[in-house]
Length: 401
Image (cartoon, rainbow, N blue to C red; front, side):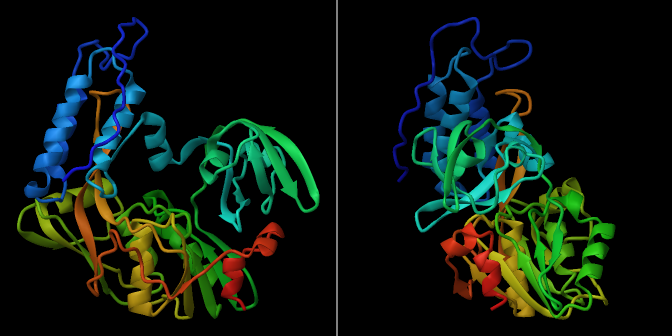
């Protein structure tokens, strides 16, 4: 049975400054649109959607032409959350830009709790944090006098109390526009070992010339550590192109299953375009994901790092490297979110708003379902606080010891 959700009070007071749903000020209730679209497209069987759809439609009665946009978005996402599947969410226009174009408004700080201390793991280039002198290894003691969180440090303005070594001081920061750089980065760790950081599988970063540069940088090395931490995934063919750097011959990695599509079967071609991939998925019930021939592939040892933010295509890549190449996987359990989310505009709410609906699920070549399970780790790692405060990544170091 569906659990009751906490009611989100939708503002009913009439106000000329209230949010209007469409440019011509004609009211369109977004709930029936969302309820019908999700019911029609989501991969779940109709038998599991009957009660949910009734709940969804019931919420529509609370909406008026003067209901606030942010409250509507929040309430719809609460309703979508009842289905407990990934890639099912409505995003406002700024979030859509952040996901697809890397345009975000943030402090530029990223970090995790280590032994109850919130440690800065990364300071984004050209961000407010970098300009104010934040450093990797800084400990965030408080934010505006309150207990900090990893989410707050990424987006909240105010007074940050910092501990750096034996010193403690305050820095005032405001989020600002940042163009996130999701290019792959190679770092030489020793004569025979390189670190390959892969922040995203957005299609823009997996063109042939960029892949050739990465392949050249790994040449003559004995071992590569592939860092997929904080990688939220992206384009499936981008993931297959990346895997082809390490797998010489075309090899089945897994398949996408779309229960509500036609009965056809197909193989995903080497086309990076998102729309082309969706066209293939729309016409077929099953789509095989196979790597592409690469006689010059990397033949050294492969080690992979994942964490709780590793999801989607990044999980496909991690599991594929383990199953096909015997790569060693270490880190924290991955997010376990590997469904194919198809995006649709929701102009009924506002320009730029989009909804992602999971229409297909992924099964690896060896039959593992990543959704809800994550990848198969060889070893769970825990960060070492003194090393992280010194700017040493203890997880990377674990592969060098």
